[in-house]
Picture 1 (cartoon, rainbow, N blue to C red):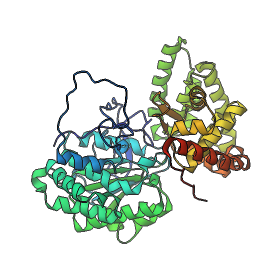
Picture 2: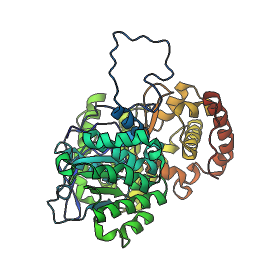
Picture 3: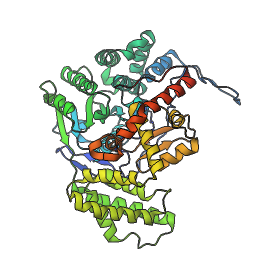
Picture 4: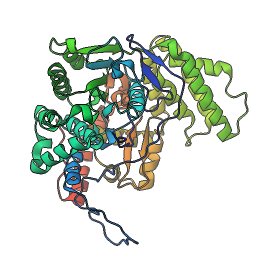
Length: 496
């Protein structure tokens, strides 16, 4: 099979500095660091627009060359428009289970663990070795903050599209189906699974296609919108594994949330799946120390700092407070690198003072609570006016996903002001692209949004506090006006 299409994404643990491999014994072990796979292509956000150059004007093409797009291509393009292109990814290390060489014979492998322990890094690891061995059928990385990557209606369409790109015979069948019945992509999940996967695969010579035993990776199922959709996806996959209606193995990762646990432990699913629990572990302290040492070396080189910085005691304290949680140390590193600060030495001083103070409050065995304290530090250090702007910005995103351009307009911010507000929290999020109209917002980890939405955790900083709730309808009214001016349609009302 030809190489799968590589597409850019940021997923739950994509900041993870090292590659991981799942151990068939039921735990997770780490491997030495290797370079990340490069991103070679990406589909633009407006790929769904009709025509080659939708709404284009005042431009020149020098020596253009156009190739005829076959009916197969048109069918796959329609399928792609109902998929999650930003969630396709190929990176990682192989597992014995994926190749069928371990004692684990179940066709579903479920790995669960709390946020920030490296689930997505392991998913990427598995994909990186499976893909060149022609054992990777499809990958999906859910993202709660991205509406194109949290929609259950796009799961099986995305999987079908990716398989179509690596198996031409399957692609031709699916393309014809999409041309003849374009509404297929809007049908129920079970109907999609049957018509876009099961039936087309039944018309393919599986042995010759190379699809037998290939792995489908679904990462971060808990970030799929709605618990009903999450559970239905599990049940559909389990039924297929039981009846062998598809030739795939299914690798699913998630946080240990109750609806997913109940679905995975149900009588219809439990006999068909194996499970790996990925806990927060101090066994990786040496890997965290290597990561911090390397990051501080680069910071020294970039800022002309002496070899003696930081001290061994400072590194030891950061490793100790990290307590095996990658998200904590990686967020600290981004905080120290913040270009809008007084420099890395001052940022490290703040972090060390914070770590010493917090250690007396949370003790040595609660890194998840310490993460909340660090998020609090990030927000409290913002000037009051900037902090309020950031809170309003996050409130709009929590209500419904809209473009950065619309958010800036609703908050009456210029492009420069919007960039500055976002840069103030660059240790937890990034902006991709320089043009406000086509810019994308990516959070390094959904735990920051979870924190800002939970009044028990973020307290006065919570975006659903009394003051911001009072601003909510004012902001939504602005969004209505902005949306109507740009599209002629009203902004959808949020759920009450």
